[in-house]
Image (cartoon, rainbow, N blue to C red; front, top):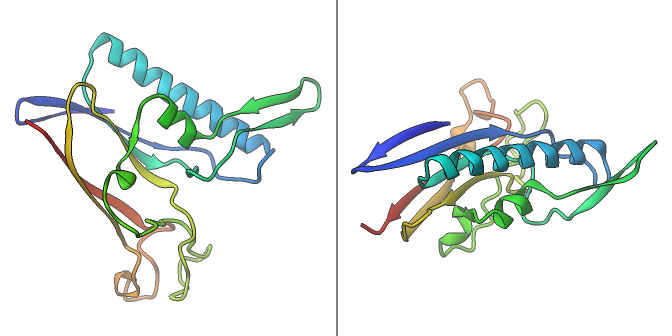
Length: 174
């Protein structure tokens, strides 16, 4: 995390990359859930000590479509998990993409493993900018996906990354 001062207000900026997305019931969904619990819990603890607005970004490998489930542990049976997206929203974070008026899906994931297919279609939105504004009111959010058009490919024919990026301009009321 990094604390950033903008116009006399200090914001805490947090970046993460959680465990890979996998099939429901997978041990990786359980690991991912634990990672998010740790992240949200740590931020909450630090915020209790030193409250400030939070911008939490990253490849969460989780989307609004993910559902709760359980991983069947061989010795302990069902170990429940809650998807990271659901945990963030449950902890009071706002999804910046959903705060704007758009019909665009905002998909950022779906390039092939070689990141070289110009016809690749992005199929899910797992790269997210979450906001916990604390006592500030959000005036406007403008978010966009970048690195998702053929024109963004390198001269050698590769996408800039294995995911498209998401950027947001967030304006708080003063």
